[in-house]
Length: 416
Image 1: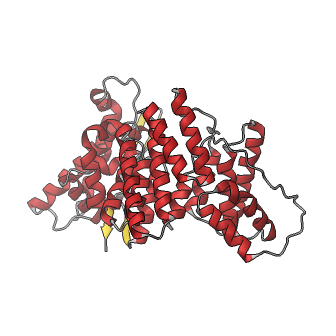
Image 2: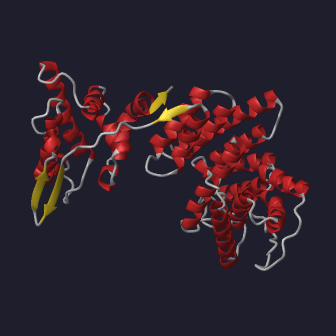
């Protein structure tokens, strides 16, 4: 559900001004009979984004039925959201701990939602809820006022405050992002088609402002994708979800949007599977190459995979420093991996063209196509990254953003 999806993604609510009263239930308390109307009211308050009012009701319903995974997942989020308003660090940590325990219980009951996964990820990171948004006092005060209104479900007041924050600090990404989020919430909570369309569009305007401030943060793209998909603008939504991945490919969150979009629209996602058959091992400065015997004297080009290993050995022995003269210690790099794959691809292509082989083995055939289309670096960066390769991503993206986008549209996203 898009409404829940975006609510779940708003996990970085940060500090609010509202102090929330909590109902603490002793571990041995007797469960009461659950009132279906009370359960629905708790869910409605949660869905309307009024986490402050939803929290005590969610607590009550969870006490009546401690095995209700749906309620537990929402209770965990409400605890997390409201913990940001607690000024006492010790009490705030207790709320975060309760949120984690509640979500783990929800997961044990079968909850595998992105909502639960993302909040647990956030709770595993250091508590940053009291860090300032801006060094400009008026902007900081305004965005915190907006966050307080957002937690109460007062979207109009929240948007007005976020707007003031952005006016005070034109570089405040979060102000534009949260204003768009609030517009999205207004649209998704309405049943009037024109109202929904107008406010989804307004959300997009704010998300565009956030992207203009920082094109390399993923969140505004992802939120915008949800707004577009809610309007039935399927392809535009897909594009924004891809842009989110390109902005931050090495974290979990940006993949949520595209994955959910693909599930909704019955689209398959998948990087090509290319695994070099040989292996190398280095000990005491000596490199040992183990060759898969099946590749020897092959009739499908498999023997050309030897070029991959020899190229990588050459890079470890000196080619790296020729390509990265400013670095003093060898590391695996995108240039090395692409160069090794390219040597194999070009050899395979020659074998096919000359008639030496009639058909290439499947992974080599895919590699030849990737090379011909200019996607080797994109493939390496997205499908075969390690710590060393990831260090090259920002520099490559700077000059090749459109090629990275094309890789996703032409290679990864497979329409049935």
